[in-house]
Image (cartoon, rainbow, N blue to C red; front, side):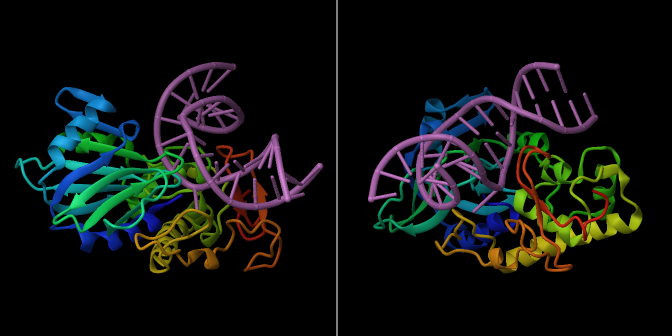
Length: 291
DNA sequence: CCGACGTCCTGCTAGC
DNA sequence: TGCTAGCAGGACGTCG
């Protein structure tokens, strides 16, 4: 589902509608989706719902950040450690600020009334792979981030990428998907990036020479930025925060193009399902070196 | 350290 | 037309 470009598109869409506004009240929060971390450790579900229901009401959203596929809603108050609401969209999550009068989507797990009650932030997720977290202090947010997230793929330094690749013999595709190494790349963009870099997904990460490393680093930036410009990739579930599909699915080089001619060399695109995490991997054996 | 595989869920679609 | 198996953009855990 949403990878970095889709989450970035949603963040850009929601930011003007939510930053600076007050959460009037928590209309609904699904117990099974919520976790929170505070000084007492991690609490889950029913207890978490009680906590966020009590704490979010009346708070202003000061900032909305993104790291990888995670969104961080920073709330004013309780300085010097603002509280943070964290949302991950999983595979099928949707997020938007909509008029409160609009019909509820199926599987809506979070509803926050904003300001005068005219609008709501809504999170819906049929498959429920998404996650909602709440932290009441920066140190919990920081611990969460350093536990699970590497540097964001946008703005990643080449030296940092080089160091991460040099220390493992895992296949390139697996490493690109590892959120602790680089945050934000998922199955679609891993394949697109490796095609753009002309590197086989099956290459060991520590086998790249300087030119190949340069190509990979450049491809990460260019593919993701291009996808953001096109509002992300809509294959089945993803829509922007305005409910519209993205456009990047029309620009894909390899993902979903099994047996179609490679746009570069016209040879058929290959699909591997079993190798590499059991997920589908699309690539061009002619253009991508070292399979 | 690494890869393979199972698990959490629901909904859509390809194929019989 | 109708049913069902298989598959899906993610992330985490376990096992060998």
